[in-house]
Image (cartoon, rainbow over all chains, first blue to last red; front, top):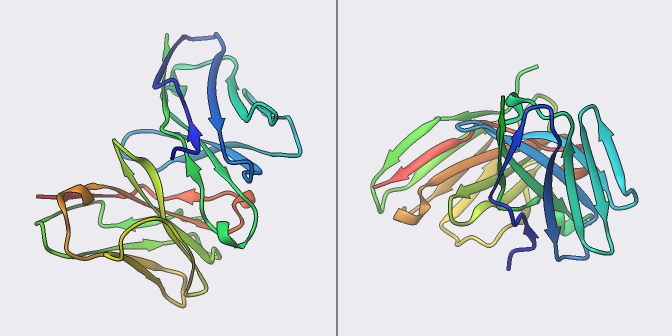
Length: 115
Length: 114
């Protein structure tokens, strides 16, 4: 039962263009969503997050959009840079005592930005 | 400010053995979570500790256990290792365990079971 899904295993983008990474979830209890970036042999690094009470959050080149009715979120990177090449994970959490410390991750999308 | 430190970075064990992995959280962080990453299952939550108490547990067999010490350092133990336990084990820390404050991950311990 995969509650968070990233249906695109990989994405290839030209430097300077927009990268759009997508994520779908099925659990209505999720109320907080995060994006992490991961390089090989390193742990995931937090990028940006969004609460379910918002539909958009921006941080520099990174913007996350949340569509609660569709249970869909996306990460936009503009402009894309070669250094952005990494695996991107979408993660979700639910508030409440039974969710302490628990993030539910998608399978990841490999982003490659070509110079 | 030091990050999350996991030791050792790499480990090779034989099937049937047991293994202990260590995690030192960011100073001041009292919550430590553990995750297993495999190519087939992705990143999966193992358990979370706060103030030496396990507050949350994922769907893993009892062979997987952990503990947390008074200085918030945490260890996880896997007994009777199976080939399928080969994975990257990641530890993450946060101030309180509230995911809205974000979790900082360590670089992981790569366990290979032969």
